[in-house]
Image 1 (tube, rainbow, N blue to C red):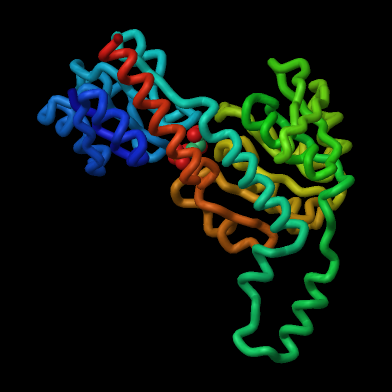
Image 2: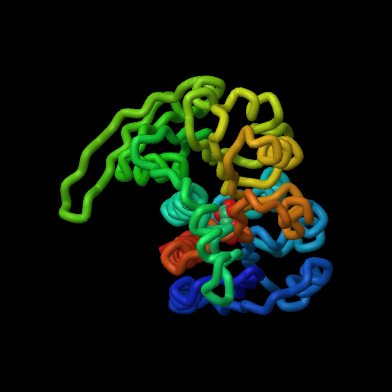
Amino acid sequence: MKVLANDGISQSGIDALSAGGFEVITTKVAQEQLANYINENKIDVLLVRSATTARKELIDACPTLKIIGRGGVGMDNIDVDYAREKGIHVINTPAASSASVAELVFAHLYGGVRFLYDANRNMPLEGDSKFKDLKKAYAGGRELRGKTIGIIGFGRIGQEVAKIALGCGMRVMASDMYVEEANITVDFYDGQSVSFLIKSEPVSEVLKQSDFITLHVPAQKEYVIGKKEIEMMKKGAAIINAARGGVIDEDALLEALENEKLSFAALDTFETEPKPAIKVLMNGRLSLSPHIGAATREAQDRIGTELATQIISILKPA
Ligand SMILES: O=C(O)[C@H](O)COP(=O)(O)O
């Protein structure tokens, strides 16, 4: 049987699939040629990340496809219900990348409070007066310890963010429509662990009280953070979006950075992806990354092996 991993797969995933008797093809096929390629090469399993889409047209054009697998969490690039109606298994790896996304949130947060994204760009080539000017410009950093982080979307990734935040000495607030409360256990290196019960609160309360807001909600039709929500936030607060483009209104965000309502923001996902708007790319108060929340070796290894396990159990049950 053949697996096309169109957006790549870890070596661990390839090894596990090969050991299970699958041929793994990692050729990147252009979206418009994908249906032909799948049919001509008799592909049984199509694996995607967020770059390749598997919409109704592709599903209709590939009647022998048995599995569509998303290496990652968000399945907004797949017509999941339609594929399932057609008898195709649709699988993903919802937990494999949570820790990596949460760590990226903190990379942006620590970078933001110490202006690292801007300081890096502006370091002078030679030590001159500009060095001293920059030292002054970046003198007003802040610590995260003791501050409040508001987590909107308190599923797997939100809860991983909470673990790190608690370990850093932050106060954690959370809001989720479906999760009433969660016991967050922080595991320390020496084997000790401490648990904290975090209760979900109304979004408005989280917005009002937090120094930093981080979003961990799925893609949806409406903005989760628009002008009205930003107005509720503390002056000088900051916001991180490593969830999905379109959950923050980028125009409202840029305006809030411009009028200094927000001190900085970080985006790993964009309303227009993979081409973020120029106004977003050029804004000096935005810390940006190219949708790399899950882009760690550890997460991709877990994703690859989890996909392999699921594929083998569906197509070659013991
Ligand atoms: O939904 C996900 O898993 C993340 O957004 C990662 O997307 P990627 O696999 O395209 O990096």
